[in-house]
Image (cartoon, rainbow, N blue to C red):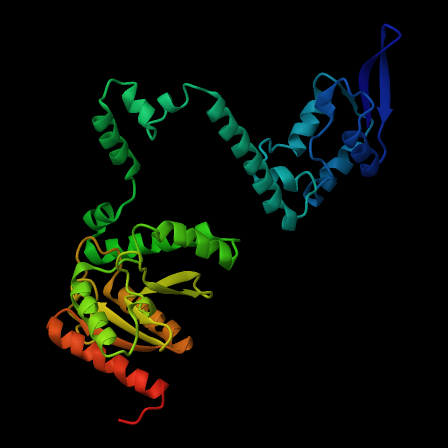
Length: 351
């Protein structure tokens, strides 16, 4: 095959013929064409021809056909390199890239486009006014700040527990929402070290978690006073999420999760958990169902509780479970006896 092109030399345009007798010669020509002013002949990201195209290319090379610059050669290239977007596997495959590297190529290309897109957003002052998920969009349409905030919240709530339950029912909807949240957490933590995850969770939980519920404090505050009066332990050695005091937590490296415990005395290796039966199912109560704002099923909650207990036991803690259906005074006594016995064992004191 011959390729004809017009090159300008010394102010004159002359016809130049390039004779191709092998695939190797054609590959070399496409990688670094001598007629660089005509960029149509240079195939971007080209390494070599794919094996699926070899027979067709050979059939063309071993002919006396002449390809001119205007039509035939460009059409010839288009038939081989028919994939034009770098987001497709075909684009990279027909240019000779190995299948094992293609996914990385696509990822790099999409990341580059994402960065370009993000930078253009910040430099465009009208961008936020055109996006419904920005409050500027609603303010620009004459809504008050309160109305704009309400509409923005409604717009951003494209996937919520309430919508899942409304569409699929409480059991299926809760399970679907829970699975979606798990996937989100996995993607959030992907590639991060355990130390980074712990710091992320500390910031996340700084205001919302690590604090005791009002009902549990009706048990824990009298319990602390009783422990202090019995000189078993000081209040500074108890962690139960009251005032500046935060709940004690353990980090599970396997599931990359932080578990908070209601009342902990690390020195004695004891944990007291206070469970409200509205939020925590008993294993023996198979009829228990979560209320609408709980985004986990009964089995998922029990499984989480089991993993939480197992983690504490792996760290050497003993656990007592209290329930809000038991009277506050009885719960105080149960917890006090549990901690007292552990204190006596720790100090090798016979009753």
